[in-house]
Length: 489
Figure (cartoon, rainbow, N blue to C red):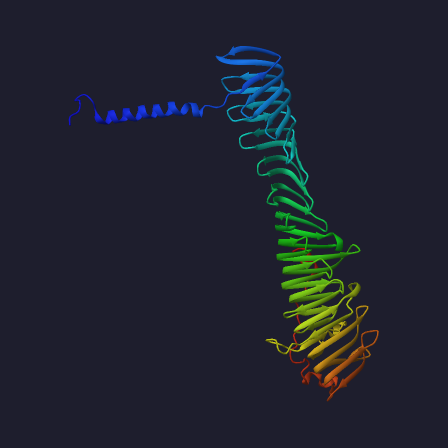
């Protein structure tokens, strides 16, 4: 095989490639060419050449067509080379079931895109969209509208500063003072993605979700309208309108249909009655059941303040209808000068006043210990002489925040300091299976009754330093919750 001596094989191969490319482009060119806009009707028509470009002026009942797109207006300027028309007056653009209305627009035929420079309305069977100006592309059924945007559907309504709407999927992406109104909630935020067919709304920035019984505020939130469920994160608060309760947390999940709310991370609840803060609960996690019977459960690092009632524990439950608190996992309660501990503690607080409190020992629980009550003297001169009671179960009754009686069962023990004419006068030790202590109106012991093998001992003041002045298990705690600290969390 031989080759011509003046032809370079590499150059020849490159020439073949160039010719092949030209052939492909020549064949593909008709396929790539855009569909031209055709003038279908006009009462007046004139033409001119500007900078080598053919321009036509059409007036009166103007109609253009491009495939399945029909364009109508009062007057138009058609730039034939650019495949573009300027439309003025009573502009209407139709494509299948969608209609675009405006007074002034530019239609780009190569992109099948209409740019509206004034008030614009887009209508289709699913929604009506209006704004101060906007852009609509007919190939991908996408609208980008700006300025006092509103979109209305039988099932929802959206207002915003800007909105991108995908007509085929009914998805809206709105920004700027966005408000989405549905049958289940009103959602407002800086930005909202509204996926109508999926029933999902994702909101970001200054989020507010208002439903029948709650108002939720957060940094971000996702609302699942089909499930009537909302998830919010960041600076979350939920206001239960019907019961004057506000709760805060880093994350919230609200089930509106079930009237159930879960708050996690730095959960805090405050219940307001008659304009006064009546109850505060702080914990890691909080569960709220707002249906009847209404209840709240706080888990881990729980702190509670209600009136003069203070508590800490690992788990607390508050039953609003019967106004009862159940405390578990190393609970402790303070009421004025009283401190109470036990494996479990139950408190009744009708009308925001402590009526009774019950500490119970669970001997089968790990690390179980006796219930223990400590009462400090209201006289600072005797602050180092705490009265003490221990036993399996301790029940304390109150009237107008004053102790009226204490019942102790199961290995009951007591140390009670005595006074006479404002001076210390020794102490009493009492033991028995059951112990009943009665108090007068000044919360002074008026009567003590001991059942089942009672034992008693009086230690005079001069010998008090020679005896043990505390019962086994005595621990005076100084970690009482502080109202101002809870409010500032």
